[in-house]
Length: 460
Image (cartoon, rainbow, N blue to C red):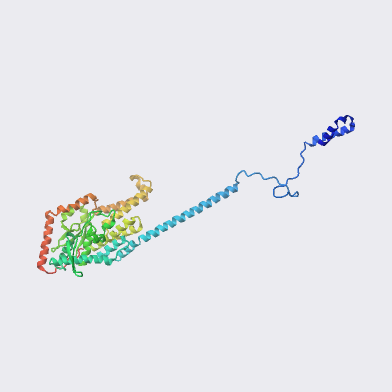
């Protein structure tokens, strides 16, 4: 059409000469183009990237853009999260189980020597056993069985040989019970010369003395052991009396362990069957009045035989088991079945053992406190409404009633120190002087008699 206008433009000077019919045709052509220009005719499909369009393929409407996840997408994602969380929980549980097993294996390994020591002690006859063997078993477990019993025996035998030399020099009989106890006492009271028949040499042996540093073994529990005292010649009121008993066993002499509040000492009989009290911490005979002077020995303790009474073989055996248990508790605590079962075993042997009853009371206190906390810390008047907590509280009360019945009174450390140091002034008192004088008179009588006196049988 534009070409037509161009032609007309070029020939516009001659339009007036155009035939009317021709003008009508031109007009119609112009009008027809103006109408058709407004109609959108279908355009052929444009080829898409990647290849030409198949004109015979069915035409599809374009896909609308994704404006968010579908319901199935949400379900799949939630299931995936659950699977991941479940797998993480399984892995965490496996780690916890492995850690638990690892701790159990470690605990089993570390406590193996104690369980073996307990089995060894259990094989001994409580009514007739070697105190040296029992003490060594209990102490060596603390050191993971580092030491050999033969070396322990040799250390005792060397001291026993020294006692025999002392007795001989004093002109006394090695077969006399009182003379042998007198010789053992000398190891605690003064230095002694020892003659070695093999080397032909004489040496001075220091006396067993008191170790004032950490004497209760709060920081270093080995301070309680005879193994330490035999090596250093320093001990305290637990180890020194046990050494005395073991030497008496080596020499076939009779002596007994006796207890006082947080203390132990030795008793043996004189020629008139009177009990004498020997204080191993300073190597002196002491009176019963001084022992009572501590102020923490009441009528109950005397009536029950808790204090100032000789321990029978059975009670001494139970005390050796207590020593094993105390070493275990120091290292591993008492919140376990082994400590609980061992405490029960000791109380089966000696139901009045004060140490075992106190250990039991302490354990039941921890159990009761835990149950009360779990119950929400109810007031005392409301405690019967919580059955488990109330039952635990009652068991704790019964345990303390037993301890009280045995005559226990808490003795502060300062009071114990003051009482122990008072022995130095006690030596000047008449009762103690008389005990020392009687011992010297008895020794002189034995020198003059030069006959063997039958050993007094063990009491009880």
